[in-house]
Length: 258
Ligand code: BV8
Ligand code: ZN
Figure: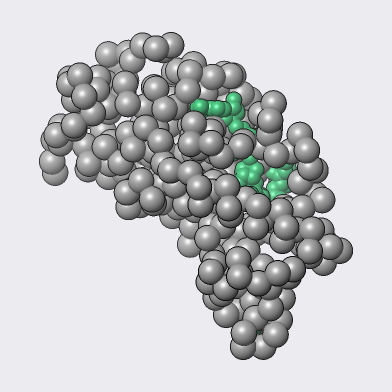
């Protein structure tokens, strides 16, 4: 295993009231979901502005839907990995634990995380752009071309945040609250270049959090982190749970209750 878990980090987690995990595409890489900027990343093949913007959707809704239907199918085939599961174990260990994710793949919830702020939406949800009616994934996958709203016939879109669009207010405010109240803040599997999400780790550190980055590669955040754990999340996160619980397995028992 690459990085060793420091006694400082173990002590900080054991004495923490509030622990937050901020995640990006890297935590889902080991499940088989392609990242955006990796060598086989999504943005290597396509430009974000060609597919993940309102303009792109208005220009060519068929192409944008083709892409989201492809990603829905990829995501439906994969399962949460040991990294997602270790965050569920950490949630059981800490009095207050939150996941803030940029991922639209719903894998944190599928793993069992309960407090999840989805900053960029969720690919399993869809809604009508005219009347706002929610449209099920089954209905969307059953239709060919651009799905139409069963009530008003309007265009249906995936419930994700496109570039140039505001983040969902409740999710953003919950994420800012969690960041500002964190004793330990993990930044996991993100290149930390998309804003305003990428401002959260620095916001947490400015509020006194112990900032820990987990990534096999350095990012613009690395110089600001108190610890940089170099390696895959699916290996490092279970090791952190083992170190905190002093067990060989991740069968975690609460370290302290309120
Ligand atoms: C907005 C949903 C404003 C859709 C996404 C300030 C400065 C500069 C630009 C801006 C700024 N403020 C706003 C902007 C514009 C823009 C932006 O940030 N552009 C960037 C590109 C420069 N931001 C926006 O447009 C945002 N909206 O600002 O609205 C506004 C204001 C007023 C009025 C109206 C509007 C909206 C941004 C959200 C866009 N939607 N996704 C979809 O997915 O289809 S963003 C999408 O890309 C993801 O959600 C994620 O956020 C991002 C990808 O980043 P990562 O997840 O980090 O993935 P990446 O591949 O880059 O990195 C993976 C990392 O994992 C790597 O570091 C790798 O080393 C590591 N890794 C790999 N394997 C592993 C691993 N780590 C651990 N374990 C492993 N095994
Ligand atoms: Zn409608």
